[in-house]
Image 1: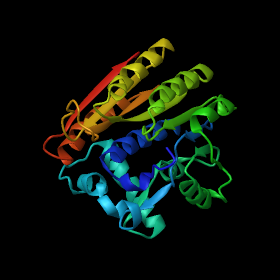
Image 2: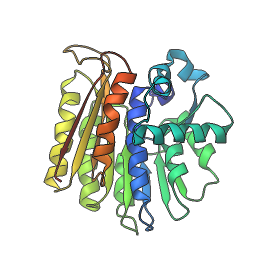
Image 3: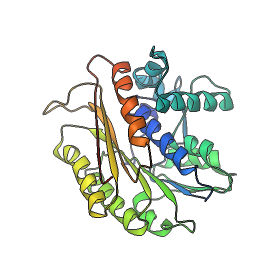
Image 4: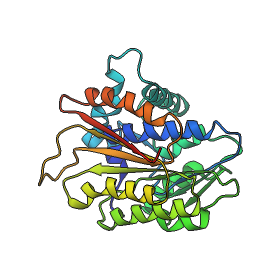
Length: 284
């Protein structure tokens, strides 16, 4: 959706869950010396400032990243301490305490010299910000194009290792079918691709059906998967807002399910008294 700007939601509870899962997946990809390709199909602007512009209007980050930082849990689960360390490192590098990394910035901090990245973004203003940030980065290709459609040309990479993040706005009803088709195409072209899909928890039927559709796609390709969901309030029939979000990961890698299982109850408690969580897995 060309009107969607992720800056409104930077650092919210959905970002925290998504970025915890992404960092865990990136860490596992880097355990092998062989290069890998990181693909972000809906990259956004790459980075945000929480006290300025769109992010400052609704201040959604106060119920997300800031709420987690205030959580009194010692020691923090590994997935959460890794996430907070990454945020702190990005802020030191930017020289701003309100800087928040989008998924491209988190990925670039984790990529090694031998790895490569491809970032796709359709929104003109966000693409210009993304391109400006990575214009001189030789490991990165930025394109103003449909990330789903662009996967065919990228897979498989020469190293036959890839991590793909799919994070559409879901403002278009077609996004639900498109993400399932893209996961299927990705696993068809590279069976061991790690594919991470973020999705919203909404009352609309296509949103409710998406996790099971993704699980069925992974099962059809005979690949292991995990599905981690975090609610900040109960999902009520007919409700218009997002009650939480989830991350579906095909080929998650050893130990990531356990990391997220440990982190989810802490996140649910940090984000409010109505928080809840679910973790499913299959194909092990």
